[in-house]
Image (cartoon, rainbow, N blue to C red; front, side, top):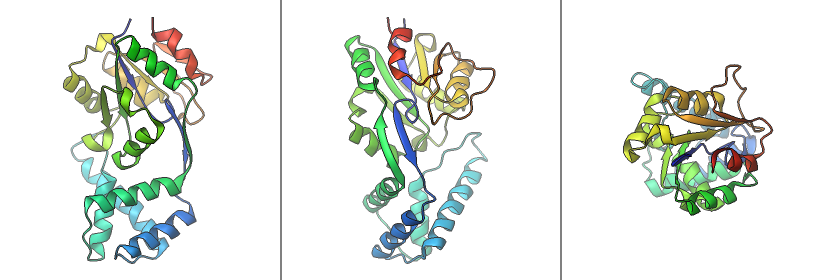
Length: 239
């Protein structure tokens, strides 16, 4: 039926709840920054963190319709502002800390491992196409035990662009020489995942989960699961 199965991550394979507005997060991050030599009050650190993200996005938007920045560079800018340079290893630790402190839970949906293992047994190619930050997502892939199932992992912060932008899809298709007519995009976002795939001439499966953005009325998916039951995917797209 299909040769290539392309998955979104959050809200599709992974159920997650995060909140980067928590006061406790910024209290502890201010301590962490201070331990590393960059002293901030928690309110100042929070305000500048989001300000610098916005400024970086605006700069990248000059050349990319759907920009995706690297949070790593925001962390480095925050340290430089206090006269400190920071190495990549320390940035990695800080990003992990932000993610852990802001996350209520992160877990796989029921049926994810079963489907991924069945795809590999049938010699299908499996890819991840995720709007995400590598510093957050790479550790979660390892923690959840699913990194090994993918033949290719595309994280938007690595590419400077994201879904539904055509550039992000094209980079995956071109790097792995995928036949879009033999590929299917599986995701929980009716625009980023479904409209993005449709604009590439690719089939798609939309699964509506608790953290899905509002679904557009003119849904372009080839297959649709509205009750969030991931276990239904296998019967629809794997024969």
